[in-house]
Length: 451
Ligand code: TRP
Image (cartoon, rainbow, N blue to C red; front, side, top):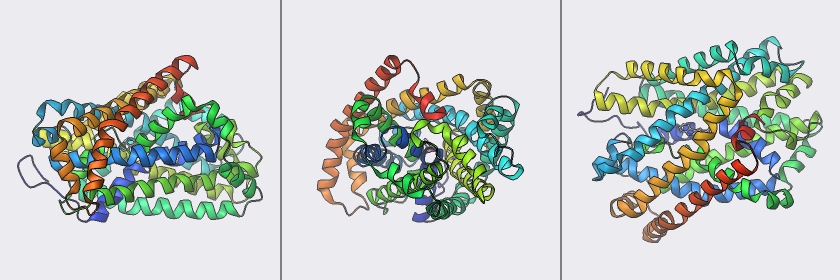
């Protein structure tokens, strides 16, 4: 185990790093939230906006965290110190707080997924998936699910970067892709498949243009969330990288795989829903646990497929939750010299307790999500952008070019992009997000999460 003073652990291979970062990025956001948001926001037209945002905002923002992490060679708080600007440590610390709050509600959803895996075996949700969701989403079943999911997360993180995280993601990430590909191949054979694809792939620009003020902030927020940005996570992960790695190439690979998984999830969800005659645009993300689960109950072989779908969702959730816990754990154990496994248990228990109020009411649950999505993430990314663009720009643009074959033009354009475009995009997101929160009279994310 590395201590504060000794040599730090490094990823055993570049692919180990990419898989762990992909494992962090590919999560419930891709499979559970993305297809349903696409459905409600105008199908392919939304996908187009989302892809643009991922490339124009997500990719450069990921490079900000990678340069801070690799330059700083430490946890997201000390990294700023090592770069020579200790007074910016608060921004990394802010991101760490974000991981704690996120994991608190993320784990509850993980618990729901566990209940659905069980339900696929017992058939409990086949008759009335909506009622089943109602019975497990809050109260004692939600607490038990949350506890088990947290215990699994703690167990993996306690084993360390190479023994736990790298090993777990090496199995889970390929499994997610193979299982989703298998499910989409099965979905292709369904009678309603072509109607589903049509829904997914036909752009409806009317819905898009009349809701642009809520779609843009959502797309930016979702791009950050799905790429695990604004949490210091990518700062922490890239701090275990060697200097001969190309940051733009790694980041490109992570963005591409993450996006591909989200798109692939759509190829499972849309054919299934249209086969049983549910309008995919009729619900929000909660549809995964109601309409989609209900569909598994009606289709031949649906029990097995439902099982496979929810196991895939579990892997996606776990490979993300371990990265949510890893970062605060390595921070505490590096800073105070406590043993990693103890810190994992201690912090994990704290997060479990923090999540408890959100198992009581779904409104509280939505608030956790809204605070993270609309406030913590954009504010943290904004701080990182100002830091990279205007404070430590010399060191960090040099860091970007190390090991990269992308050339100076790329580095300079990136720097100006980070200086100007990213802050404006985030400013717009914050303003529009707050506005639609007030005008539309609800928490946007309540809609995102619960439909
Ligand atoms: N990217 C994850 C998902 O799409 C969720 C997430 C957001 C996350 N921020 C994170 C995971 C930080 C790990 C670390 O579901």
